[in-house]
Length: 93
Image (cartoon, rainbow, N blue to C red; front, side, top):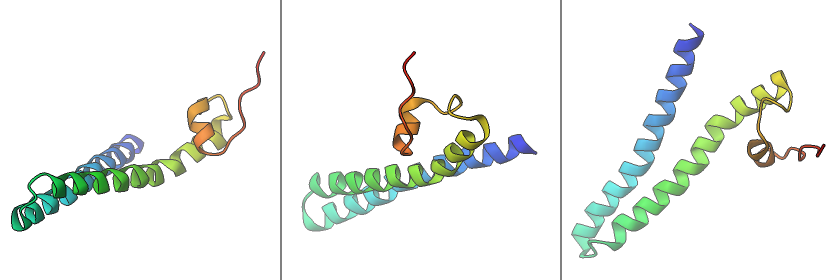
């Protein structure tokens, strides 16, 4: 059952990313057609969707990274993710 839960989380992230990119872009295409700016509105919609997607995926993934850091120590979560979560840099040997 644990693998099923991980699979559903992955599907959730994929659907979220697709909707965040397609819906604002689609609205931008519609507005561009209605207002005569065929390029500007879809690009603005894509940019807004990309920003929303990045923030949303970060919010979805952050609890899992925190759990991995708490369970396995600092070795399980690599330095770039620890930096994003506000962790300390690794000690140099």
